[in-house]
Image 1: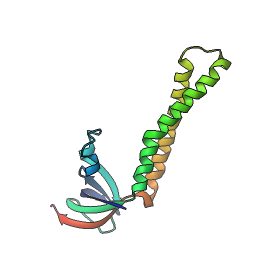
Image 2: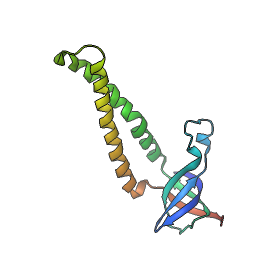
Image 3: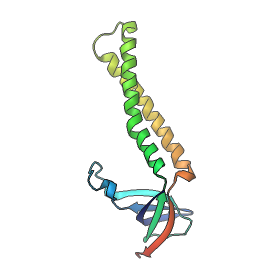
Image 4: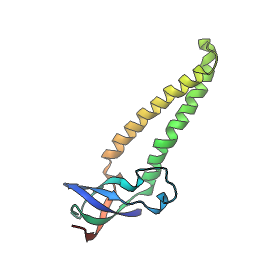
Length: 140
Protein backbone atom coordinates (compact mmCIF):
# COMPACT_ATOMS: atom_id res chain seq x y z
CA UNK A 1 0.00 0.00 0.00
CA UNK A 2 1.20 3.46 -0.86
CA UNK A 3 0.40 6.49 1.26
CA UNK A 4 -0.08 10.10 0.20
CA UNK A 5 -1.23 13.31 1.84
CA UNK A 6 -3.77 15.83 0.69
CA UNK A 7 -6.35 18.38 1.73
CA UNK A 8 -10.04 17.51 1.82
CA UNK A 9 -11.94 19.78 -0.57
CA UNK A 10 -15.44 18.47 0.11
CA UNK A 11 -17.22 15.52 1.64
CA UNK A 12 -20.28 13.60 0.55
CA UNK A 13 -21.43 10.95 3.01
CA UNK A 14 -18.73 8.32 3.30
CA UNK A 15 -16.51 9.78 0.56
CA UNK A 16 -14.28 12.83 0.33
CA UNK A 17 -12.61 14.65 -2.54
CA UNK A 18 -8.96 15.13 -1.64
CA UNK A 19 -6.58 17.50 -3.42
CA UNK A 20 -3.24 15.75 -3.67
CA UNK A 21 0.02 17.66 -3.81
CA UNK A 22 2.68 16.85 -6.33
CA UNK A 23 4.72 13.89 -5.10
CA UNK A 24 8.25 12.68 -5.76
CA UNK A 25 7.34 10.47 -8.74
CA UNK A 26 6.02 13.59 -10.49
CA UNK A 27 8.91 15.81 -9.47
CA UNK A 28 11.04 15.48 -12.57
CA UNK A 29 8.49 14.31 -15.13
CA UNK A 30 6.59 17.46 -15.99
CA UNK A 31 4.39 15.58 -18.46
CA UNK A 32 1.16 16.58 -16.76
CA UNK A 33 0.55 20.28 -16.47
CA UNK A 34 -2.29 19.51 -14.05
CA UNK A 35 -0.22 17.25 -11.79
CA UNK A 36 -0.31 19.90 -9.07
CA UNK A 37 -4.12 19.84 -9.01
CA UNK A 38 -4.94 16.14 -8.84
CA UNK A 39 -8.17 15.41 -6.97
CA UNK A 40 -9.01 11.87 -5.87
CA UNK A 41 -12.21 10.50 -4.41
CA UNK A 42 -11.42 8.57 -1.24
CA UNK A 43 -13.41 6.58 1.27
CA UNK A 44 -13.81 8.66 4.41
CA UNK A 45 -14.31 6.28 7.37
CA UNK A 46 -12.79 8.80 9.82
CA UNK A 47 -15.23 11.58 8.98
CA UNK A 48 -12.65 14.09 7.76
CA UNK A 49 -14.08 17.50 6.91
CA UNK A 50 -13.30 20.08 4.26
CA UNK A 51 -10.04 21.90 4.92
CA UNK A 52 -8.37 19.12 6.91
CA UNK A 53 -5.04 17.65 5.87
CA UNK A 54 -5.29 13.87 5.68
CA UNK A 55 -3.19 10.84 4.90
CA UNK A 56 -4.74 8.24 2.62
CA UNK A 57 -3.56 4.96 1.19
CA UNK A 58 -4.17 3.14 -2.06
CA UNK A 59 -2.97 0.02 -3.78
CA UNK A 60 -0.11 0.64 -6.20
CA UNK A 61 -1.26 -2.22 -8.42
CA UNK A 62 -4.45 -0.25 -9.12
CA UNK A 63 -2.35 2.64 -10.40
CA UNK A 64 -0.22 0.34 -12.56
CA UNK A 65 -3.25 -1.44 -13.98
CA UNK A 66 -4.95 1.87 -14.74
CA UNK A 67 -1.83 3.26 -16.41
CA UNK A 68 -1.52 0.14 -18.57
CA UNK A 69 -5.15 0.25 -19.64
CA UNK A 70 -5.13 3.99 -20.38
CA UNK A 71 -1.74 4.35 -22.06
CA UNK A 72 -0.50 1.00 -23.34
CA UNK A 73 -3.66 -0.88 -24.35
CA UNK A 74 -4.70 1.65 -27.04
CA UNK A 75 -1.20 1.54 -28.52
CA UNK A 76 -1.24 -2.25 -28.65
CA UNK A 77 -4.70 -2.27 -30.21
CA UNK A 78 -3.62 0.34 -32.78
CA UNK A 79 -0.61 -1.78 -33.73
CA UNK A 80 -2.69 -4.93 -34.00
CA UNK A 81 -5.21 -3.05 -36.16
CA UNK A 82 -2.44 -1.90 -38.50
CA UNK A 83 -1.19 -5.49 -38.87
CA UNK A 84 -4.72 -6.73 -39.53
CA UNK A 85 -5.11 -3.92 -42.09
CA UNK A 86 -2.00 -5.24 -43.84
CA UNK A 87 -3.46 -8.74 -44.14
CA UNK A 88 -6.93 -7.55 -45.14
CA UNK A 89 -5.65 -5.16 -47.84
CA UNK A 90 -5.22 -7.82 -50.57
CA UNK A 91 -8.79 -9.07 -50.03
CA UNK A 92 -10.11 -5.53 -50.44
CA UNK A 93 -7.77 -4.87 -53.39
CA UNK A 94 -6.47 -1.81 -51.52
CA UNK A 95 -3.01 -0.33 -51.94
CA UNK A 96 -0.99 2.24 -50.08
CA UNK A 97 -1.16 2.95 -46.39
CA UNK A 98 -4.93 3.40 -46.14
CA UNK A 99 -5.64 -0.17 -44.91
CA UNK A 100 -2.99 0.20 -42.19
CA UNK A 101 -4.38 3.53 -41.04
CA UNK A 102 -7.99 2.38 -41.08
CA UNK A 103 -7.15 -0.84 -39.24
CA UNK A 104 -5.19 1.07 -36.61
CA UNK A 105 -7.94 3.65 -36.23
CA UNK A 106 -10.73 1.09 -35.86
CA UNK A 107 -8.84 -0.92 -33.25
CA UNK A 108 -7.73 2.24 -31.44
CA UNK A 109 -11.38 3.29 -31.16
CA UNK A 110 -12.28 -0.17 -29.85
CA UNK A 111 -9.54 0.24 -27.23
CA UNK A 112 -10.95 3.63 -26.20
CA UNK A 113 -14.32 1.93 -25.65
CA UNK A 114 -12.60 -0.63 -23.44
CA UNK A 115 -10.84 2.14 -21.51
CA UNK A 116 -14.21 3.83 -20.90
CA UNK A 117 -15.70 0.53 -19.71
CA UNK A 118 -12.71 -0.05 -17.42
CA UNK A 119 -13.09 3.47 -16.03
CA UNK A 120 -16.77 2.93 -15.19
CA UNK A 121 -16.04 -0.39 -13.51
CA UNK A 122 -13.07 1.00 -11.55
CA UNK A 123 -15.15 3.96 -10.35
CA UNK A 124 -17.66 1.57 -8.77
CA UNK A 125 -15.06 -0.77 -7.22
CA UNK A 126 -14.96 0.25 -3.54
CA UNK A 127 -11.84 -1.87 -2.91
CA UNK A 128 -9.92 0.12 -5.52
CA UNK A 129 -10.67 3.52 -3.97
CA UNK A 130 -8.14 5.26 -1.75
CA UNK A 131 -9.00 5.24 1.96
CA UNK A 132 -8.35 8.07 4.42
CA UNK A 133 -6.39 6.52 7.28
CA UNK A 134 -5.39 9.57 9.35
CA UNK A 135 -6.41 13.18 9.90
CA UNK A 136 -3.16 15.14 10.24
CA UNK A 137 -4.37 18.63 11.11
CA UNK A 138 -7.13 21.13 10.58
CA UNK A 139 -6.55 23.89 7.99
CA UNK A 140 -9.82 25.72 8.66
